[in-house]
Length: 201
Ligand code: IMP
Image (tube, rainbow, N blue to C red):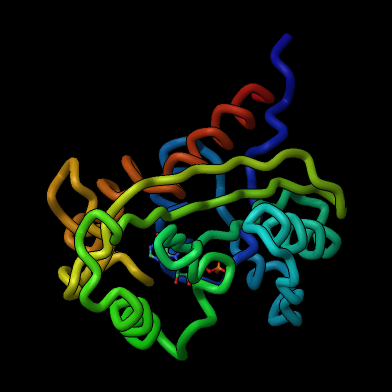
């Protein structure tokens, strides 16, 4: 007998509209409804992201928000890691400037005059799935790119305009969110999550 689908609805614990858009693209075809945390709990205080790793922060957020609902909650922590800059900005990716262009300028300044092979960067995404304050599982995804000298493209969000993905010779801001999902850190982590939750179907 087929078990009842456990994960026909997921609460997404993020206020980042860029992330929400990418999640919705994925789940719309899977009959899994993505509900934003704000729509369930209103405007509650965000937890402090005190972790030293993406995984720790993803877990903090998933545990915190899943205490406000009986539905399974997915949180994400992600960011850009530049090995040449000692993995900067890492978990501070969203905090090194007031807005995306300030943050982009900050890393471009730090890489000013640095040659191409040292401009390697990774986007990392860690998803945490939790229910009633307990972590069920985490999933991670990573993608390698290069930080180009000037922003290119208007799609996506965050550091996408300077993240050049060699296999397609474009930045992540020059492609659609469907295409970005095929290669991105988030897309890779989401695929692992989907494999896990569809086994419960
Ligand atoms: P979080 O909301 O704490 O996970 O912050 C993640 C930050 O990392 C975002 O605000 C962006 O600056 C950056 N980031 C994460 N994923 C992406 C992406 O797919 N494209 C561009 N920037 C990203």
